[in-house]
Length: 392
Image (cartoon, rainbow, N blue to C red; front, side):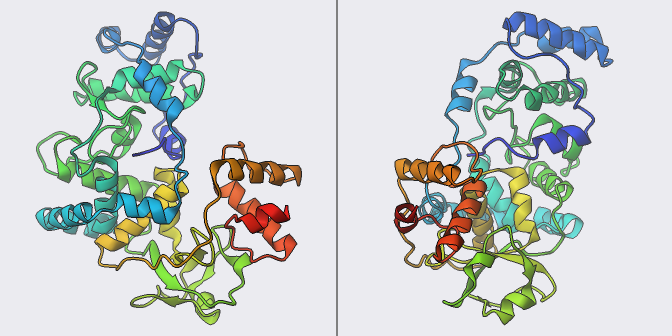
């Protein structure tokens, strides 16, 4: 389920692994040789390096998975309803009870809610049941050799080498996701070096079979990425029909008190303290679900880069923390892939930077849509509609 994390470069920099110099491409055997030479230059023993790289192979399955990955084009309502099944909710609640003491300790130490970790655990690996069957070293080396994003993956190879030297990585047997993530909450080797925790006290960090280690390590990683202890992340709200829609979206935030003054109300319970900053999030425009996104919501983007996935994970965490189902409303229909690409081309023609013309409603496209809606006198809720496409 996980896409390549935006936090990868942050983790690499913070662990001091960013100095990998081997160029991508060329023959794979030659590339392996150069990686071995660099590892030795970094101070790793030649005998360890030889054993670590001995059986490494290029993995065509990894390349296929990398080429086929895409940010979710399904809208939030449809995607969240498909992903957040009753079975996952029930399993989440059972695991919350089963690992209650672990979650209590995590909440005291890191201030990360159990709902947040349960949602990641469910969406990443179905509570550990589906952790991936790719040989991790082969995947990392394949992606480091490939010239698509080599700078992201070369340092992960050396992080895996460090784990190997600590007895925490088996080049032949360690398996996980296609992009090199390992364990129940899918952490990269550099993540594990930086944030791995032996929470069950058995003398080793085991993210594949120890829920205590995996969940605590995940909490530490979120804390490292900027999670603000004991603060909310997402809350369903109701908004007035005359709200200034141009002030919605992640590019604008203001204190909760100001949102309250504008008529924003919690669907259940109370809003966060009045001084906490927040953004009004409308995943499918003013006619669809509405949420208040607090600072911790933004941390999710350090774990995963898909808006739909992030919002689903954050919402799922609220459900596992006791919130009810969101009100779907009656949003305008989503544009088709072809229509989205046509819209993006028209936005580019009008001087907007939307990134790649890919039919995906990402942050840059949303921002451009909102600006054009404002210019054309349409409700500026950043949700692309046929009305906007026709107006352009």
